[in-house]
Length: 172
Image 1: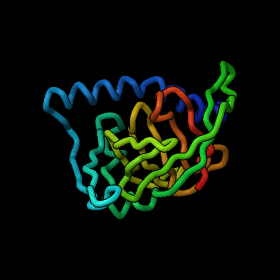
Image 2: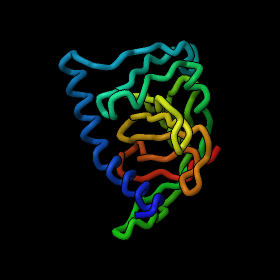
Image 3: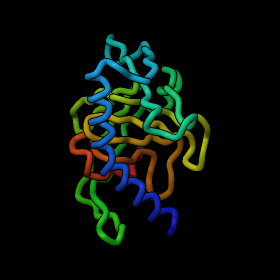
Image 4: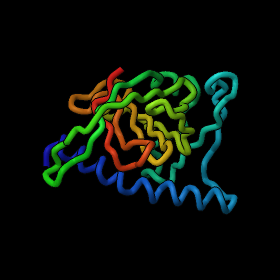
């Protein structure tokens, strides 16, 4: 399987499994327990700082870390994304466009609606896509790269609005 097809399949699986992760996080929070290490970034949007955590249980052990405020700022920007879905043959079918804003604090705004991330994790090491930031926000999962990637852009994932609409080709 080619890398682009594998990447599309990975995005589709993540979009489908995102609902499970969000439900598990909500259940864990409701029970009063968490394995997350909270960190206050001191920036937030406006004057209120965000408190972020990284749900490391959702990733291979040691592969992600909670980003510091200075590390989050690297991913900040306004991204124009393409919305759509993958058909049965794993071809991307565009259905619209959107505007994704990642604040220096890690706050997410999509199509003018703010979403506070329930998890913010960053790759522990640089890999083939640079160092990725993974944000669970609303019903979606977003991946923001430190550098644009051919065929993906710099931001991609599933929409915070519904968790099933795929976002790709995010460019600043």
